[in-house]
Length: 148
Image (cartoon, rainbow, N blue to C red; front, side):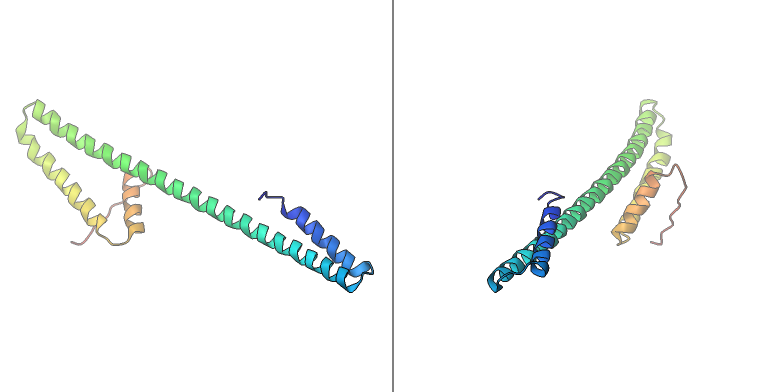
């Protein structure tokens, strides 16, 4: 159904109303004109309803795509942070500075524990917000302190 299909249906409905009001007709023709008019107006309402449903579905799909893109950016940022931590560990191993490994591993475990606590908050919207804010921390610094 095209977006402009409702225009001819509305015009036919108006023409039917004019016929009912202005042209002298027999009872059978008047009934037929009334049925055509009602059908045209029903078609207009149905087409407009379908158009609104389609627009709403397209908007939902657009919002879902944006949310998925935002989540992918967050996941990529978190992955990048983890890769940085692993590269620091590998660097210390290659340089044979084993005494520095304990501090780095403790820092990584602390980050992991903090992310685990955030993931168990119970409100998916809040969890996504906190992880996204952490990943996009360029514009503001958000510190989250959680009770265990």
